[in-house]
Image (cartoon, rainbow, N blue to C red; front, side, top):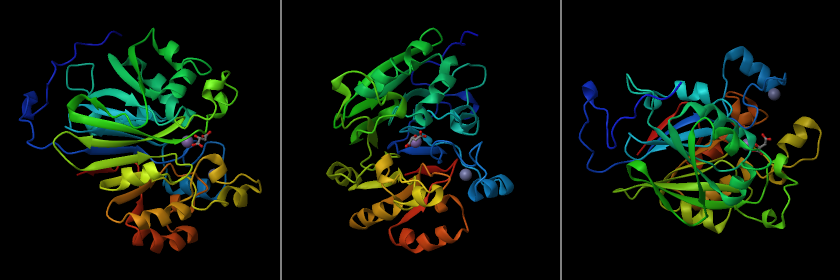
Length: 329
Ligand code: MLT
Ligand code: MN
Ligand code: ZN
């Protein structure tokens, strides 16, 4: 159905629906919507110990994405997971104002073209309109081999914007985003994407550094981190919150669990054990690990593996992010 009219620009829902006063200094708000790697926890076709425990106890995790806002009025998704519909319904800030068919969601920023970060874009087809921000290779993949762009076009006005590492851009509500190049790992569906131009690009995977206008504090989100880079050192220095890749606890976790040979690093994910050393060089920020694979003991509270890592996490000021967690500063 066609959307109802959008509230006027600058509309800020206050008590009784009246525009409220603007805060003198806006601060960042992050609603962590999902914290699992592709497949989620439990994974639908997996009966491993962790997935079985999650089924029994209800300790589930939906797939990684979050929403960020600088003013609490205009919100942006960072990644759009396959679990997006239920994640949006669970986030009170993202509900439509009464009598409208519009929400505070203004757009989506992508950190990769991976299916667990992009399938939810199709869920947004009822939107009145939205901006979609992605690096050139990701944008090309989403208009070619995985044609989300062309598929969305008849449903909603998706305004695609190219972003480049190191070039910050401004979004609604005083939010500023700076993409960080984090690696050249392509989604499996794009491994054979024709054209030399896509080889060796370091912006297939990005993170973002967010700041709010009028505030000096920043947040970093890097759910796919192949290696710790000098760029990340710079972004993390001075950040209040860093939400980072916690896919695997150790580099050989998947190989140990599955008997295969794939290392965490080889899959584009620096293991928690290996990133903890870097956190030690940057004390200060609150670190939250996200994008946890269902093999990761940190996704299973009370497991021996989680207990073994707990002291090192605590020493680094790190914790595991939780679905639905609100981070405000
Ligand atoms: C990843 O983060 O490595 C990918 O999303 C893996 C996948 O789910 O296929
Ligand atoms: Mn993933
Ligand atoms: Zn499992």
